[in-house]
Amino acid sequence: MDIGFIGIGKMGKHMSSRILDAGYDLTVHDLRREAAAPLLEKGAKWGDTPGEVAASTRVVFSSLPTPQSVEEVVYGTNGLRAGWKEGDIYVDMSTNSPSLIKRIAGDARAMGVAVLDAPVSGGTKGAEAGTLAIMVGGDPASLESVREVLETMGRKIFPVGDVGFGNVAKLANNMISLACNSISAEGFALGVKAGINPQVLWDIITVSTGNNWCLQQYPNTTFKGNFEPGFRVDLAYKDIGLALALGKEYAVPLPLGIAVQQDLHDTMEAGFADKGVDAVILPLENVTGVPVRLDE
Ligand code: NAD
Image (tube, rainbow, N blue to C red; front, side):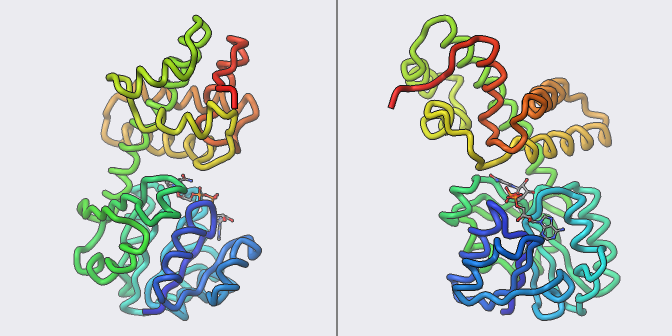
């Protein structure tokens, strides 16, 4: 099966590399050609535009930062639509707007092209190890025809319903996870300012009811002062915005989601938009004057 992959970023570079290593013929594209260099060295082909990638493959995957970038890749000049042929499949693995991917799926259907939304969870480590959770919206037959490729990237593949529902699941997950991220930062800023050693507090909370995935990252991030992404603050801000928009669409009040959005906004305003999401603790540390760090 000829595969295309668009968006060779922090996630996409690992996901596409795993597809290539599994033996598929791979054609890649990104706005930054240099991002594809390691893949091209391993035998991947380069497509100058998304349309060229679509024209030369049957299935195209994408891992793009924002709904705007997905829209550009599909509808832009020489976008996927320029290269789609009847029977093709497009699998968007970005965290994206459910309404946008539904619109794309409708337009693609008219051309005989099937669309799945298949956002992922598990971070860059999960992408590298091929252990992502993948939540798939779209027609079951199309999912079955790409399942083996998805299995090169993830261990847990969840059919969620019609196209768009993959992102509904993902946005619910990220709203919960980002709330844990913000409140963990507040708990640690408070406890450490009040005098507890960060390691002692972590040992307690990770076996107590406050335990969560974000806290599990602290030994490699916050405790070392390592805020390199990972998952960037600006992308997290995008996700919480999409979750709140979905809340508005379905008239579901999301007051904690709004608080998380404000927290991420403040973190960006403080200059940390391109840091990893653990950086929400940095503005708090500026207030407390006590960094939550462990000595090497
Ligand atoms: P990233 O910014 O590192 O990578 C995105 C890539 O897309 C970049 O290489 C960029 O050059 C490319 N790109 C942007 N616009 C393009 C266009 N119009 N045409 C071609 N290429 C374009 O982002 P990432 O962290 O890899 O995240 C990708 C997606 O996965 C996002 O939707 C994100 O929300 C989601 N996600 C990220 C993580 C994480 O831990 N980083 C985890 C789960 C899901």
